[in-house]
Picture 1 (tube, one colour):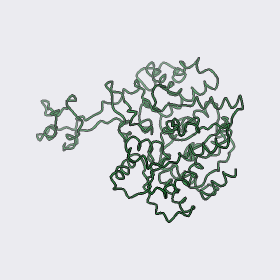
Picture 2: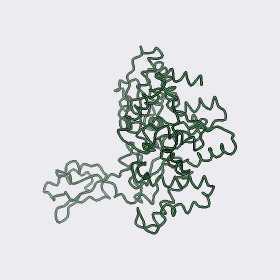
Picture 3: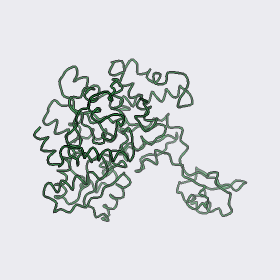
Picture 4: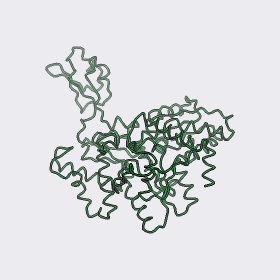
Length: 479
């Protein structure tokens, strides 16, 4: 089976190769002695495959290795820029293209507030970047659409404008604005922006359990797992986790059931809530809409909720969350979550872990994963949380409360809904915010992205043994 079939892009495949090799060396206790050789292992010859020369290629790979080992400890953000890899995109800003006809009207010159536009002997327009303020007026009035905005992919991806370009023409992330959603990570065509990996922490936890038998390691898997690992069956993925050394695999969707149940009651008591399930959405409210912070649901996320329950009932438990979300890596640093979740890895990193131990999950028997209800499982896609809250109101006899939900699919829709609510132009009494388009199935740490993922999650939800939220919670409580 070709490795590329497991991922959407070659950038993801490259990232995976680094993670796989770092993990393999860690399992073999050879990481420290071989860390400098990993770039040569990945690019063994003298012919470059991605860059101008093999030496630059390996230098960039060395930076990728550092991120695979946890990245810059001085930088609190889980998203980092590899400066030497960020040099191929054209300078951002407005540019005059070959479509300029050298017309007589010169509307672009007339509207420019800074006199930044001049013309050569062929009457073709030119923009003086030292004067240009990037207002875009010239582009709007050009009858030939000859002036375009060369916005970099990372800037286009970052809808909250946390990315700028520094003096060295590399991307620069404003940590005060960044919500760690990872949209820039997935969209950068050179892989110059990456999320830090804590895959070594997970290996340490698993190896400590293997040697000392001092604790039980739980894998809490996000419901969006149903849309991933399409080359294998979900039951085989669960078996693969146990082959890695996880004692038990639990659905984060069960935590989602618990959250929906509690959130419905909280909503009736307070009258208006914003959801707390997506850490990037919560972070966005805190940074951009501080007046709405009191309305954030006081419930922990599904990940933290089920992790807390496990640790409260199993004192020697260690919890590793496996999901699509880079923002979860930031969430577990919060004081309210830190005691319950020991590490987070993405689906990309789980694939690297499987292959670092040569585990072919397609050859494994299928195990079961059946902790949650349909409603907990559909949290993985946009609108699922609102549906679950509506069901929870019904099951608790609270359906006299009129739910007016606004489900926001992506951070742009979140911004619109929050802005309207801030000025009292939003009638919704419950705002479900998902920073990634499509919901968790669009997370940056997914192996694959696409419309089919929603159908897979809905199918997975319908296969749940427990048909109501109340039943799922009751069964677990009696477990």
